[in-house]
Image (cartoon, rainbow, N blue to C red):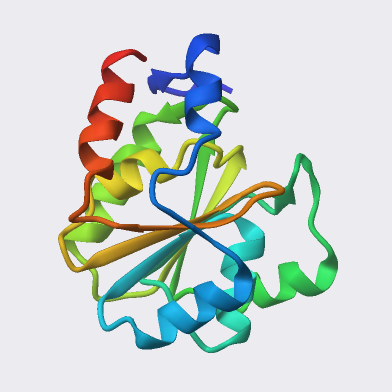
Length: 171
């Protein structure tokens, strides 16, 4: 696997990224908030993506890797996820990195948001929230799962972009 890597997560930043970049919610709170929300949504992570799709909430794109807590996801969750997307992109992104291909595809989807896109990561989507939030237009909210904690709800016009810039400068 010869992948062009844009960013690599150093060990000293791992604890920082275990903290939510936005509002931490439980499933019911998330669904209530999304049903009221009028903007566009991006979902990152298999469980959160399957959860919103089960409730007929469609993200403009989702980023998944068919894993949860490093294990394979159950078949029924995989089936829900695989039913979504006009376009499916398979992108290599090794653990603890942001590949150039992932970054550029996120940019492209935001520039051309006319289709629902499922990005299937070969590797891990553990850092995909960073470019998804940083590159997002102001009418987009990004949601991502934080293992054993809940779902993080991040409006793109909030303070998260500055925090992400600071993190990326250290990578």
